[in-house]
Length: 268
Image 1: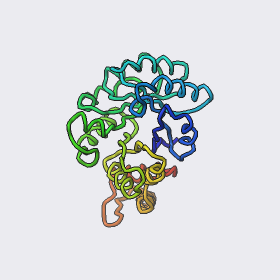
Image 2 (image 1 turned 90 degrees about the horizontal axis):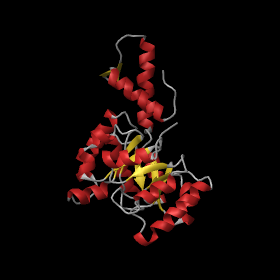
Image 3 (image 1 turned 45 degrees about the horizontal axis):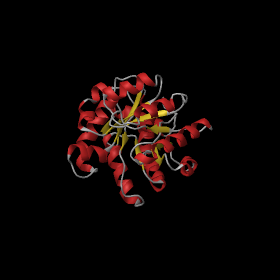
Image 4 (image 1 turned 45 degrees about the vertical axis):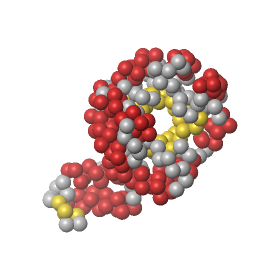
């Protein structure tokens, strides 16, 4: 099964949007109990999310942080729904372990949003249940006093990709693009994230979903190159192979296989 490429946030206090989000084309939806919900609406939002899962709904829940007064209530409310994955905000080894122990067996997405979270990544990826890292670029920029959430944070992105690989996790999820509807902006952000090794992106508007889904797929040129690499290798029967004037060695073969696997194409 192909891992999600697009994760669409939907505010927990807007149950009228839950089904719309599910039908948006996003690979996964994130029912948000944290940043999108004001303090006076936390309890109502939690009830909405519980009702969604009780009625057979699917999704991920971004709970409130471990240091918030709503953390324990969020955990308790989700205890009955084994199919609800959990996004842990401001994730670090302590908060991830806390959630893991309270909800054993759950798939956890660790949202890296702070200097502490980035500095302790190598430990976080070893916490049982952590399936994927995501970059909370805006909160990270605020915590580290770095203005902007784009290319200026690419050093942090590299660390997240490296830790994901060391932890044998799925390719990580890039943070949000604040421009809601400009397809060129979101496409450019996806291209950069993919070049760094990310495999998905957080979305904050349904209009971002299609360019995100499309952008994380291999291009036609990449697919053609991969087919030519593997075809030449097969025909060579063990001999040295050149394609496009370049020697075909193990890294190129691995890359070709990864490209075709991403399209659902079988490879030898």
